Figure: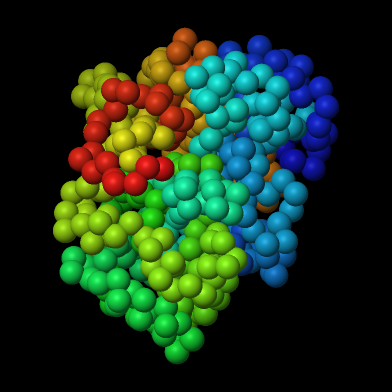
Length: 421
């Protein structure tokens, strides 16, 4: 089977289909690509999606600039398809939603601790790929998002070199505010919204983005992501508020500022300013407290592989997600044991995972099935997953992210925040 169109979609008997897949693969679920469009952004063309399919959802829906991994989180897009943002498992000529598998099998998939606490897989990751920068925006905390029936959204960034041969138009990200910025200055930018560029970036600082590095961004921190293709482990939510009125000559509607705020507060400028974590935004040591460099965990040198932490640190004192990058040298094989369930994406090379084909495609058609994405159950991760590089010339590189509290041994960042998520 090479096309989603050839698959039968299951909504019943998911449990037996999933168990069959797990028995056949040693605890792995093969996932189909999950594409997400954004109407207000311009695709960066580095997702390996066939250029003719960039507007496969329709021009009115916008270009496809995101691919989501291991997602049980719906995309919060206007006029979205019913399953937009939801990953599908592929097995034996059938497909069924990962979200349904988690609900049917619970702890057997994501671990008892996570399922008992959250009743779902509460995180996901994506490739986020744009030609230029996006508006200076924040993601609400749990308490703020709860006011509109949503969940908060901390997130993290890693810039995989394999997807960043070009930096596109603006490989710099504005984050937070310059120390000394006042709330009155920010309020003034909201008052000036309809005058054109409201000038909020004049209060901020841009950081140059470097492939092979990353950032940890807490809720309520403003950021205007630049134009590198980004791997983004994050909480399973799609809330945001955009505080910039004009980006590269394109209007940002006021509705995108207040979409996840209570309706009675949509024109309360003081309330909107107070949505920001002020201490974190004006932190004079912002980079020190949020910047991530890869840290080797296992392997290196003559070991034939290297496993690095690429996302680590806590958000408001809690480890909500972590991520690693595994590199297996040509002709080498390694068995990796992890503490919890994990979702993987292969970004370079070809080989096998538990004996199944694993490779990074050169180009992907919109309906095409790939062999680059899998979900690994907690039991399989703890038993060990075997990666084999069958290439004689290039490394096999895999990114994988984890759910809450999966890696207590992960490195720490100094900043812990001052607001409970």
